[in-house]
Amino acid sequence: MPQDIIRRTGPGALLGEGPLWSRRDQCIYWVDILSHKLNAYYLDGRHKTWSFDCPVCWVIEREKGGFIAGLMTGFAELTLDPFTVRHILNPYPHEPENRLNDAKADDRGRIWAGSMHKPITKTSGGWHRLNTDKTVTHVDGPYTIPNGPAFAADHSHVFHTDTDLRQVFRFDIDADGELSGKRPWLTFPESWGYPDGMTVDAQGGLWIAHWGAGRITRFNMDATPDFHIDLPAQQITSMTFAGNDLNRLFVTSAAIDLPDDREAGTLFEIPSDLLRGHTGLEPQKFRG
Image: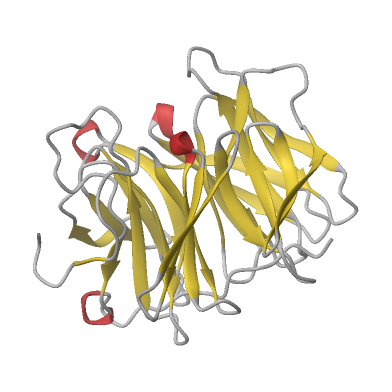
């Protein structure tokens, strides 16, 4: 393992994804989509897991308590103690083989979530906004494998990815959540693998996970790479800044089709001294 990279859970998550820092619970929540599990790593070293009856793709905290979860069947309200799941709506009823994939809340308390075809045999995914009144708006598409998204600190623009295209897009966004000015921002060369999950730091850089290349990279706003950090697993999926000072970075990975990758599916922590002084932004909560 590269020096100073810390293993916080054992390997084996088939598709570790969606890490979320919870200041309220002092833990990092993350999912194993294909194993139908939500995991928690608490900063005091405890671990906990909850099982679902279908793929669980992410959770986002709700301002009034509990969570919104992204499931195979769409958006759902979630509590963990007691464990309850209540369906809200399916944004793609015409595509029964689709599932949600990767999401973030914005500064108005709305959730932006991509969807994709579960077997990944057609480009039937989209990008959806769950509004605070629990209605849904289709905002862009089609997508094969949507990932991100990542909002700028002032929420004037947002980045979103189609991993299959190796393409990161940038959009302008207004207070009503309307998108405009979609343009390609960054294309990954083959040697970089595929762009996966993303996060923006408090200093204005965009961090991107490299699926298939075993690294994360911080990019400047002109799309030039600033620096990268190598990890011991090849399929790196996403990351979140965490800790009370948001100066620790937790990174998820996947073990799909990698029986010989001994670190695949591990939750890693990158200590603050490797982050070159960069810190994160507080995750937004759903306000509905």
